[in-house]
Image (tube, rainbow, N blue to C red; front, top):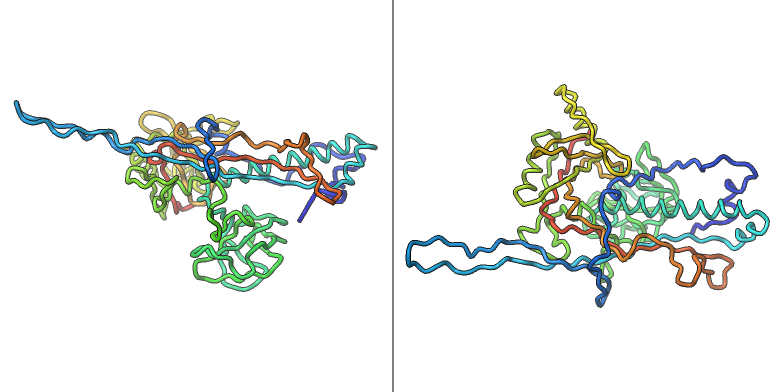
Length: 401
């Protein structure tokens, strides 16, 4: 277990150092900045916290046309179903050794610099991981092994989310069982060019079902609730599951397995599907490679549609649909080969409140029993919800450049 000790903060405790600390980490959270949060409707029930709301999945069918004196057709009613959105519990922790507090007695500024930096990085880290989650399927996958071998070092599909010191599990994708050596392992090295990861303990990977890496404990099939992370766009776009407990043919996303090159016609077809279902996407999120492919398409056709301003200081390529301009925005966290057309007005991050430090004891610092160390805890109870699932469009397998 890694913690904040006098060795780890040595770079901050120098007599002279250049501010601010040069971050070598990418902390953009594009999707998160676009989705509103709400605590409206959050209720406490046996087993946890939930948000319930009705959805209209069918029109009134009591419609008839008759000649004079003929019996009218049967009456009808609106077809309503209930959706129940559970809130998941997210945590961020750090532990600070007691010796560091002694620094405050002789150098208050050095202590403040050390602690403030640790808190800032923790806040940035949970926000970044939340952005990953909002693109995911709820199963916590951060990378997939692509080789078949028993070794400490493996090749993965994309090492983007892997970091040294991360505690991870390696699960067989087909069955969600732990791979040999895959439970509670630790990443000791990552090569982002070769897409390789090295574990502290050898992991056996097979070619059947491929193994996937998750944060340790974030998905456990042996428990009553296997899913521990909130849902993301990949889960909402997966029409093989009953999202939030509802199974209805109308309650389906518009998902197209493209497995090929992107085109304006493909995007128009996707948005048309959403429109026929009654959905109104307001923004498209893509991976960097899909954005490059679309930009190259416009360049080949000698057309450039300009950009649109995007909240949070971002801008996106402009796509015109139904007489309105819609931004196509690239997000480094969007999985490769994906494009999502998102109905922002129908989406919410349901929560009790935003990420916050636990202070029920009167202080953020809680002493570890029998140890000269203090724990700091951040937490948030939340779930990404969608009120109109059939307003969501998704393209998968888009060829990147």
